[in-house]
Image: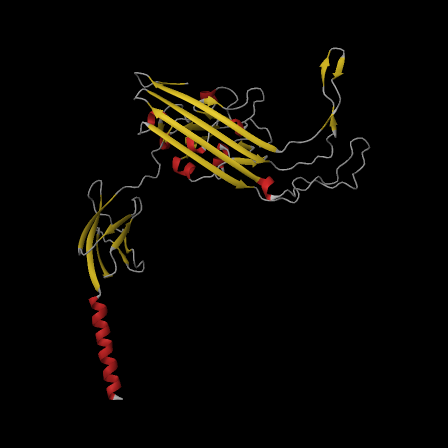
Length: 377
């Protein structure tokens, strides 16, 4: 029994000596890279062992015992960019943190039609940054507004979207002033916003600014219900002489057993309820519910004063099926005269076309003037 106890003691001491030999102490200081001031409370964690870590003291110093397998420390602090520092065989290191950019000083132009920081803008404004646009899969530019506070969005089709900031949403609301590069994007004859007609794509958008609040003084009458301003990338702002970007997308709209269901439809001729009415169900196969998108963008910066941009977009798909028992089965073509309506030819079948195809081409030329002005064609 005594021999067994002696062996266990020897093994325990050896294991402790081996464990102690496998650890080492790394000390250091964490500083603000802009002014070399210490950063207290910074988190220092071993990347290979997240359970090993400490926080810096009031002087920004730390001392951490790590294993021999630890080669990298992860340093993080609120307001600074997280850094990974390779320690190698070092026992003392100095880390200089870089201030993080939270877009608090982002430049906007929609609040007062001049460049200013978003914190100084005299209105409630939300900025959708290039990073957010890059990480969003949007069929139309308006789809990027989903989740923005104070914005009400309804989908009226596969690619049709209606957006309202202030006021009541409806199927053809034109209350929100929609602009693309300081140009009005609404359909003039209807005074309605049709997002599918906007000739731009996510790969061409630089940012989107949503102004919540009256803007009549800056944008004219009928603009008291907010502004959505889409700003595309300028070829004069790119670093490289030429840039080419292409993207393709494939989507699948989920199956809905009752695309439209009219409860107790009434025959307008007799006033009786259609007892045997059965709504048209969307039982199409998967191929009919797919949609495809493609976009190609090429821009060139000839010199510091002249640049051009070419954007091509394509979309193909099938919209939701729609069944309305009140629609006539046939339509008679004709025209109206002072004496009355004149029919032309025979009547034709009233068949809905659910196929969607969009082909867009946007050409842009930028010329920078001697002063701060810029001409865009």
